[in-house]
Structure formats: structure tokens, C-alpha cells
Image 1 (tube, rainbow, N blue to C red):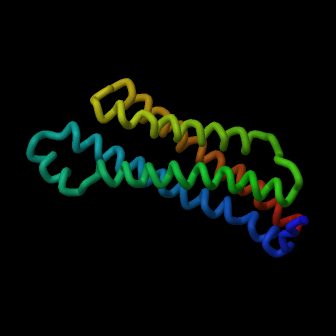
Image 2 (image 1 turned 120 degrees about the horizontal axis):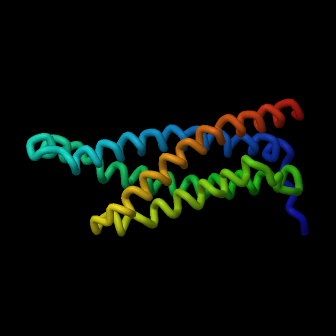
Length: 156
């Protein structure tokens, strides 16, 4: 028995991944802001720290990071699945490879959190570096992804 996916679903499913990724790009920039504020809170003088702690930057940064990790992994798998369903193959190229690399980077970055919580500065700087590189790659992915969306629209 073969399950046939209706053409309308196959066609429109191709836009779920790009929409999700644009939302995640915005969330990634917000996570960067929260991370900067969290670091500022940690390094501020006593009076300033007291005011910044009330804004709960650390917990918000951690929560957004967790959401990003989960949705980036699911979005990457989903994008690959939709590509395979619609084309019978994956297109191995810079967009796919960078996306897989980004997924590995965000997972590694998240895995550093327990070490950072224990005060490991190498883990903290590695976390920051990975996420800055991730944000840069994400910006490039947005541009290359829109080129792919344009090709899809031309073939509709």
C-alpha cells in the first residue's frame, strides 16, 4: 500500500521550512540580545546588577535558546523531508551542508551550558563564538534559501 500525498500539500509544504527559518533567524537575534544582557548583568556593578537581575535576562536567554535548538533541529529535518518528498532526492549543496553544520553548532553550543553554569570561561567563550558564527551563517542561509524559494516559484 502506497500513501500518496496530495499535490496541493506537496506544493505548499515547501514554504513551511523557509517561513520557520525566517522566524528562527529573528529569534536568534533576540537570543543574542538576551545573551549580551545576561553577560552585562553578570559583570555589572552591584547596584546596576540589582536592577538588571529583575529583568530575568539569563532565564529568558536559556528559554529562547532551548526553543531555538528544538525548532532548528525539527526545521532542518522537515526541510530535508519536504525536499525529498517533492523531488525524490536531496540536493547536496552549500545550503544543505551549511544547515547541517548549523544544527551541529547549536547542539554543541547548548551542550556547553552545564560547563558555563559551573564558571568555565572556555566553555562560555566557545558558546559565544559558535553562536556568533551561527548567526552569520543563518544570515547567509536566509539569502540562499530565498534563491531556492524563487526557483520553486518559477517551477510552479
